Image (cartoon, rainbow, N blue to C red; front, side, top):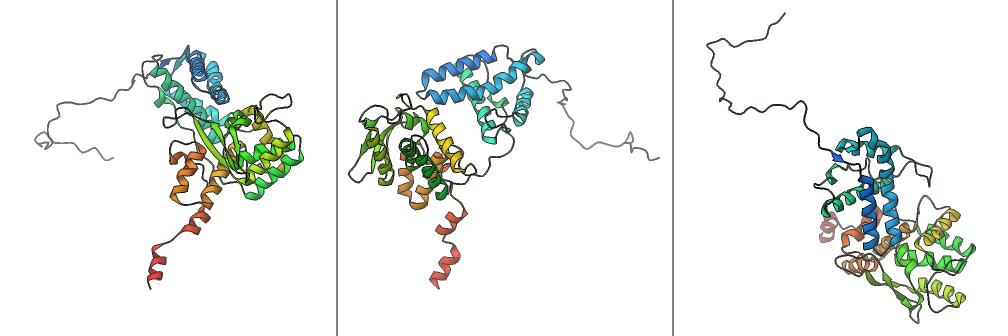
Length: 347
């Protein structure tokens, strides 16, 4: 049996003497938050959002997203004596991976899980800024596991099917105008629902613009902007307005004559998607906004048009707009000029 090699007493150790020896802490203290009133705190965050933001449908979305955590914490909190640790939020992220959506009956999509965790970070950041907590807990919230699915712009044929289906269903002129303005202007559903007839200007060639109230940013504190539409979109809009016989008030109304809400716009789009059977390409109204941005850039790839698109969509910077332009390798190939091509031109 081999024995360990030992140093003889007269052997000199050439290493420098060590003066400060660090020890391994076998039982480190684990930071925790007293989360007994955490759900109450998240309710205060939602109340602050309702007082600050104009788009109540947006705040409803915030509230829905945080409910996932609040329900989980109501079950988990008693098991940890209401002490929340970073590892607990890792467990929450795993919980979201297995959770089922009541709307689809399927597991939560990556974007849904990522948004829930993002909203929790924002709420904790707000809590620190407003003195409800004494430290930064946002770093405890993990990122969603996985990666976002690759998005592709809806094909023109799919967009055409939406318009055809809308024209055959109930409220055909109204619903067709809603879809045309979403895909023809790149508006958000909340922006569309807030429009009044008086805020829409239609020129002789049927093109025009609408005075839109969107999200407020540092660059645009009021959120107001003028969004244009072409004559093709304008003709569909004019057909709807002529048939309605109205010249003032909400642009789109429901069956009872009241303003159609953002949720109402969402339902119109979802019914058209189901009727056209294009669920694989289009999920909701925001995909029509993406389609507008994508086809705009495909037909106008110059830099000046990129800034015009940013203004149309109401973004503070083009980096936001770029996320909406779902350009693909064929778009790159069509615009590509390589050094090899330049060499051949020279020869």
